[in-house]
Image (tube, rainbow, N blue to C red):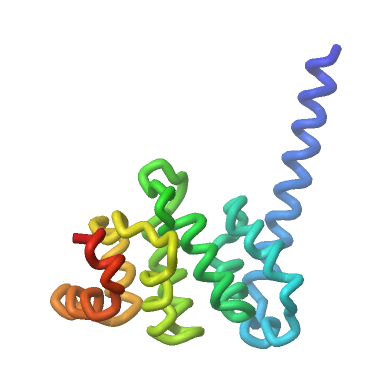
Length: 166
């Protein structure tokens, strides 16, 4: 029966995925990210972005990606979390947690100017600046209160972005 064969294939694929996930978890847990990043090359950027896209340990993959290539990390944020076409309300999973962690990592690795580069980048979804989850994540990453956040935002948005964010 074809259905039994298909079910067996599904069971095998699921078992393989769970084994791989467990192995990947163990590696991430013990990985000295900043040291390993020194051995990485541009060739590693692609598979790290794929992990983020496929939601396979995206926070871990983002941290390593940010160590390797800050611009690629910013692009990953735009593609999956903060781009014009991204709708966090249709995203499955922990949008707030992931975004908060990723922005914290970005600031820790590349400094606060990385967030300035992010909001000034073409494709940044300015509509997200009206989302409390986003503003809280930025403010937390920059260690700012609400008033300081508004000041930071106004001073770091370009005129083109500023006019559309209002």
